[in-house]
Structures are given as structure tokens and as C-alpha cells.
Picture (cartoon, rainbow, N blue to C red):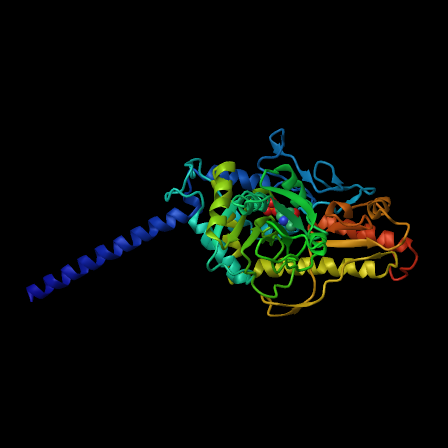
Length: 465
Ligand SMILES: Cc1ncc(COP(=O)(O)O)c(C=O)c1O
């Protein structure tokens, strides 16, 4: 009996010690993640929240690295708003639809303030390399592959991944890589209308290996595509939002597919892209153009190695801080079923396109591009257009400079000739903040109403929130 009591006592003792250890470690962990117990990160978190809590009337933002006046952060107002709290609407303000700044996604990130916030320790990744001596985060690479698999926009299997300081750097890296080992001068082309940076960048960085030769369609017509040719293919295209394939073919032609806008936000995804060189960017995926992060998926090992070499020589790889930021953003993108951002962005872009289309359809003087509905691999149905830009055309014979016509109506766009097209065209950005878009809509309504043919448009109404 005494033996049995001893056994029971021992059992209880061991059980009690085990339970204590369990609760103690659990408490320690809970304490670790408990916000009350934070130590060195508390000040940074408090400062970030204090700056973000300053009201700019919904028409501006304060930033940690912005100006401070008397210890208080100064509001940076959206265009057409002024005053210390951005509460004054500037009535004669011009609707600036020029730049492709993708600020339409700001509200998405404000809705995800908690999960997207990032606190960087003073000693975060100070080294030139990661532990494996590479300059690319393996975890970030895995997240990128997951985003492609959810958006169903690219085949990543069998491809190498290269990071760049935005896709801008990778466009240049690809031209270098594809022309480096060529025996003859590589001629770089793009089908008009094309994104102007292809020309400006190629001209600026011209070497003995390559030069910009203009319109790929002209080259095709002249049947002069012998020798090494590099064709930039933007799909969907900036400025007109149309899906594209290379116009030149042949064993000496290499294509660089710029897929900056190949996301369900901006286009139907008929099938996952599977090209030899494909370039993507978070600028148009998450809207973080300022973070300067892009990546390339490359099939050929030599091309990949040369692109990698380019980014290493240019800046020893992409900033580790930028990679951390990109990782945090992609973590949010992948939250839940990983589809939320695509739905959010698509709805917004579609709504903007429909509003603009409706106004322009009431005019005889202006037209916009026609984008046919198409089956989308992401939404698994036929869907209508939601492009990043309106490619507006002035149809009247005398309107040879469409931008000048729009300027008369207080609208600024980007002139057609910048895209190697006629100045009868103007590109209007749909990517900007709600404030900018609302003003653009208002000014377009004014313009079309003045034309007289738009009786349906009673009074252009500007919604000032
Ligand atoms: C077609 C196209 N490619 C590349 C870029 C540049 O993107 P990033 O910010 O990644 O350099 C842009 C930006 O507007 C673009 O329109």
C-alpha cells in the first residue's frame, strides 16, 4: 500500500512539473508576442502610429520621413487640395492624368495597415550577402512563385529568377544579356505605340553591342530582320492595354516580355505566360513603385547569369531593405486564399474604365481604344476590360495635337508621339488616387458637355469628400 501511495505521489509530482513547464513556456511565448511586453520596438511603433494618426482630411498623407513643423508631421496633400490639413479644394485645378503612379492601391494597404506594417531593426541584414552568400532572399523567391501560381499568369517551372531595382533595371539588364555574346550589333525594337523607356534607356546605355532601331512593325514590313534583333513586347501594352505577341520571329530574334501589367487587375489572363524572358514588377502588382523592386523569369541559363551579373555590377544586388519590404507586401497578398488584392484592384480598374467609357461614348469628337472581352484564367470566366490607361483619340481633323485640346479643358495626359504614335492620341492614366480620378472624370464630363452632343450629362458633378 505504501509503495502504491509513493507511486501515485511520484506520478502527480511529474505531472505537475510537466504542466508547470508547459504553462511557463507558453506564457513566455505569449509574452513575447504580447504587445504590452515589447521593449526596443515600442518607440518605433508608437512613432509610426502617431505620424499616421494625423488627419489630412482624407486628401493627404503624413509620412515618417516627411517634414515636421513644431514637432508635428506636415500633411502632404493630394493634387488639387491645400491647406494645413488638405481640406481646401483648389477649384481651378488641372486634372493631371499624366503619370503611371499606381496610387489607386493606397486604400487597399490602409485596409491592411496591421499586416503590412514592418519594423526594421537597426541591425537588419547589414551584410552584403545572405547566409548562402547570395544577394536574393530565398523566402522572397518562394513568395513570388506562389503569387504567380495563384494569379495563374506565368509558368515559373524551369525558369531562373533575377531580382532588380524595379523592372526598369531588368529591362536594361535583359538587353545587355541578350546582346553580350552576339557577333553582330543587336538591333532593339518595339511595336508602336510603345513604352518610351525602351528607346530612352537603350539610347542612353548604348554600347558597341546594341542600339535602338525603332518600330518592330516597320522592321517586319521591310523584311529586314536578319542579324541579331531584340524585341520588347509589352503585354498588356502601355499605352493601349492590348495583349500582344512578338511581331518578329526567327532564330536571331529574342523577345523581352514586359509583363508589368499582366495581372488580373488590368487584363484577362488567357493563359499563363511562358516566354524565355519575362519581366514583372511590384510597382503595378502591389502599387509600391517607390520601393523599386522587380523580377525576371528567364529560361536560358547564360542569359540569366548575364542578367544577374548586370545587377551585381550595377549595385551588388537589390537592397536587402527593399527585399524585406517586398516580402512583407507579398505576405499580405498571399493572405487567405491570396485572391483579395486581385479582386480589389480589378473592381476598381473596371469601375474607372466603365465610367470613362460611358462619358466618352457620348462624344463624337473623342474615342478610346476597344478592348474585347476575353476568357480569364484567374477569374475562370469571360471578363471585360480594366486597363491601366485610356488611349484617347481626337477624331476631328483639325485636332492634330490632342494633348493641346485636352489642356484647354484642364486635363493633362501624355502625348501620343512619346509612344511613337500620332499626336492625335493622348494617354490618360487610370492608376492614380481616387481624388485624381474623380477630377479627371469631372473635367472629361465638362469637356464632353461643352461639345453639345451630350444631353445625358446634365451637370458635371465633382464628388468632394
Ligand atoms: C510597361 C512598363 N514597364 C516597366 C515600367 C517600370 O516599372 P518599374 O517601376 O518596375 O521600374 C513601367 C512603368 O510605368 C511600365 O509602364
